[in-house]
Every structure is written in C-alpha cells, then in structure tokens.
Image (cartoon, rainbow, N blue to C red; front, side, top):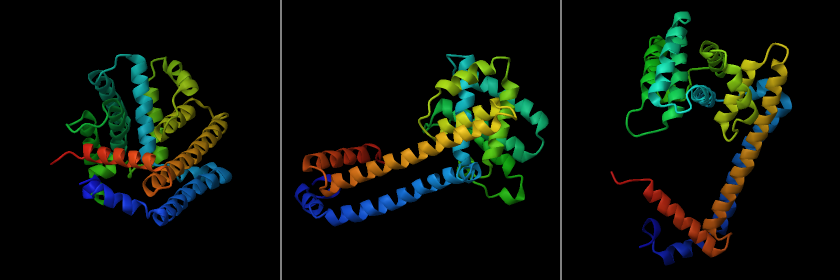
Length: 276
C-alpha cells in the first residue's frame, strides 16, 4: 500500500488525470488570494483608517509581546523566564494602581501573556503565559456580557481593540523606562526584523511611542506604506506556493518533482500526527 492507503499505481493513475483538478484548484486559490491582495491595495489607496480596520488585535498583541520581550532582553541579555516574570509582576502592580476596571486590568494581563508567550513559545505542558491569560479571562467574565468568553477568544484578543492594545503598551513602556528606553527603541526601529505581521506591529507600537505630535502623522504613514507592501508581497508569495503545490500533485511539474513533494508532504503529515 502506498501513501494514504492507495497503491502507488492507483495514485499515479489518479494524478495523471489531474489537469482539471489543477485548473479548478489554481483558479480558486488565485481568486481568494487576489481578493486578499486587492483588500490591501485598496487600503493603501484610500487612507490609514481603511488599513486600521484590517488590523487584527491578535497580531497587535503579538507585536506588543515581541517589543516588550526585546526590551527585557536588552536589559538582561541572558534573560530567562524567572527574570522576565520578575520584571513583569511589578509592572502589573503599577498598571493596576491606575486601572480599576476589570477590562483594563485584563488588557494588561493579555499583553503580559503575549510577552511570556513570545519568550516561552508553545509547549504541550503548562506555560507561564497561560496563568496571565487565565487571569485576563477571569476579569473579563466579570462583565455579564462576557461570561461565556472562552480561552481561545482571549488568546486571539477578540475582546480588545488594536488601538487600546497600542495605548496600553505605550503606558507599559513609560513605566519600564529607566532612562535607557530610547537606546533600545532607536536600534530596534533601524534594524529590527520585519519577517511577519507581529514584527510590523511591534514596529508600529515603537514608532508611535517615540513620535511627538508633529511627527506622529508622518510616522504612521511611513509604517502604513511599508505594511501594505508587506501584505501585498505576502499574497504574491502565497499564490506562488499554492500554484507550485497544485502543479506538483497534478502533473504540472515534472513527475519526479511532483512525487518527491507529495512524498514529503505525506511523511510530514504522519510525523506531525502522533498516534493517540
């Protein structure tokens, strides 16, 4: 028996008839990705407000976590989890001294959870970030309209506005500043990575934190154009990947290449799904 329970002969025969499958799959993928790309092209052509409506609170939260993690590592190059938590707990205490509403306290804990998540990464065992995520959930559920809120919804940041996450992160940076914040943020803005959405969101938070009233508009516009370019380029890359994958399994590429990619996909599928 071959991949996914089919004999190699049967699977090859099926894939040899894949021209129609290739055409349909490619058309669907291109339509979806084209719509995504058009969304960002339209946002760039219209205004910053059009773009801000597309921004995910989840990605802004991840960006806040990356930015705060970078600051903690700037302070402690060999930062470990205990040191990170030791710096974040007094920060929460200081935030709570000004924030009395459960929603406000929940937002601070959401950002702390994203900072620890950025440091820890995902693990099957209990992670420290989950404690702060749970603390955020408990505070949010004090609102009768949010009693059925789930952990997943809090993880995604669906109850928070992106602009509130940015403003709260600014306050955290002010409380953490010991006179060296500018020494961290300027190199971060000049050489910080821009590999994914979270990197771009971290850059937005840093730029708007440093900007004054006279330069804020220019800073946002600069970031706005860069992020739109990133999203449009990302859609092109995704379209190329989809087209290559479809061609590989439907005969659009040389047979050996297609079978090699298909075999690797099968091995990856089984290796990433352990027996239960």
